[in-house]
Amino acid sequence: MHSDRKRHVVSGLLAGLVVAARPVEAHVDYVTEEGGDSPTVVEFLTAVLSDPLHLLLLGGGGVGVAVATAGWLRYGDHLQDVTVIRRTLRSYQPYLGWLLRLAIGLPLMGAGFGGYFFSPAVPVEARLVQITLAFLLLFGFATRLAAAAGLVTYAVGLTTHFPTLLLASEYVAGFLGILVVGPGQPSADLLLRRVVLTDGTFMSRFRETTTVSDLLTRAGVGKSAAPLLIRVFLGFNFAFLGVTEKWLTPGRALQVVDKYDLTAVLPVAPEMWVFGAGLGELAVGLCILTGTFTRSAAGAGFLILTTTLFGLPDDPVLAHVTLFGLTSALLITGSGPVALDRSLIPTLRARFGHSPSTDPEVTTPAD
Image (cartoon, rainbow, N blue to C red):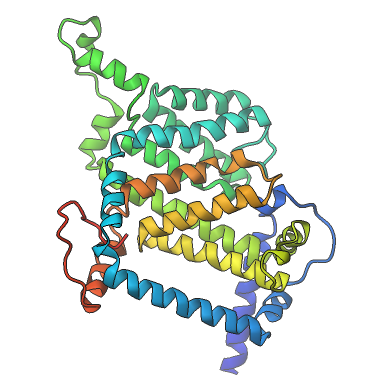
């Protein structure tokens, strides 16, 4: 009786997930069309997990990842190349605001002129709003206010286009990052700020005006919170896409494999291709979300996006610019606060016999 009840609960949850994911046609929707036979989730997973070769590949891949992780924990921080790369990436911090503005402003401008609302899967005209926000972000004028307005615009849209608009949840990460980091340099806001702070200028009389930055500071929200905010929503986006568009709605993803003859690149069954792609996105998403090997996970995410860019020639590149920018931002910042890179991973490194780094700048050696 207990077993039957448990089976019914699991089946109900799975069915609920499928129903929720059904409107989410995700990024594969950009390069495929509706129609044709589509396997159910059970049929898809059975095709993958009932094949001994697939289980062998998955097991071998898991062992490979475990060995690589153990090697990285033990020896990664001793590589001078890694130390130099981290130090150089951290030196790009002054341009983080600019990077985030470009990553959000460019695709938002494209969405406005393209006639869709954040995601190509939501064909709703909001040209004036999106282009205005994009212009302010790209120019770096009233940057934090524009980011706050962007968050509100997205939230309003999500209420009427849920869950489809979750495809573009990376915009939330970008808007929050900009809100916390600010415009960076170069930007119109920085130019005006310097004029305001210079004695004798006309604008210096507005020096005591309260800004969004002042309000955030009073609330105890500093720039150091940006990596955490970016990680939460970017990690969710990767994991969400991996599960919903690959595992829970495999039909369209199988069309992608067939359309681009991906089995000729890696000779495995199409179902294994789709399952592996979803597993990769899920793993990257969870690592980013939890702050586990953050820079490595962000680099893997960037590699996945680059592979998509060159492997799917008719995929709308502009729709992925935000993801490119946000993964690049995490390469610069690392994990930030509230991350396993700062708690569990150092403990694991010690257990693997790793000696502390002699580089005083390596504050998050795990990522």
